[in-house]
Image (cartoon, rainbow, N blue to C red; front, side, top):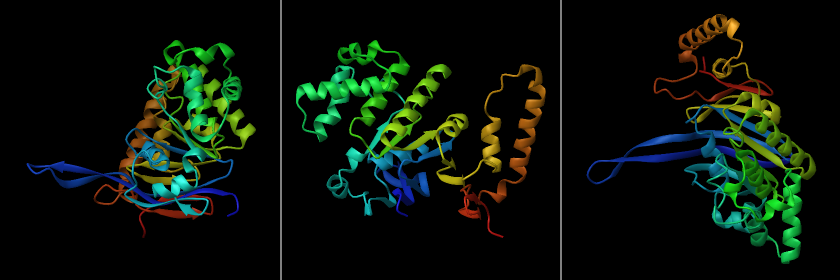
Length: 305
């Protein structure tokens, strides 16, 4: 397709489990176990799942922080699982990441002008004056003023630090930004601010997002298409009507205390339905079945009859 930006096919990331006196590999943790998806230019794609489902590992594999066990990551027609190809295509310039923990992802010894300016110095040849002006423009894009240039990360609130992380990711004018739980540690009002800045950046620069989260509400606000992930595999792509997705929705805390008994009964009914139909979704080893196409835009992990 002409608008295809990044294509992932059958991606696997397996971590070895070692034991015994000689530290032999005795098993593997299937963190990501054969996922495939395509991100279009300027599109927001969401990956949702509970903690430990493997969604963050996908993002780390895409930026090269962890090595893929097998599968292909195709960018501009080239497989970028090879580091030499990534360097030749300037892949690390075009694909940036926003991390979940804003404090640990920012160097505490550096001022904001140096944190945001670092990727610019790596990929652009700018004078000190032009660098400062560009960093200031990026800060203004995420709602921070000129005084922020010479402050350290600990002098900002969590929401402000996350906006600095967003500005740093946008600095090289990437084609794709991988946002790994970018607002999960923030208050609801601050979450809305950060998400709105990200939407504004997408509109201004035409950047695509891979949005990784466990919060369906956040992903629904940000994304055009989404995938539900469980036990290292996608269990659904396209809509949110699958039984596991219903369980994910039911897990969201309710503030309507007057109807808490009905909420509890609904949650119990969904759990009973899930347990009764579990064999339709998982094999005898507890692994999710491959995706089966239900409609043109909707695939679900189901056992073949």
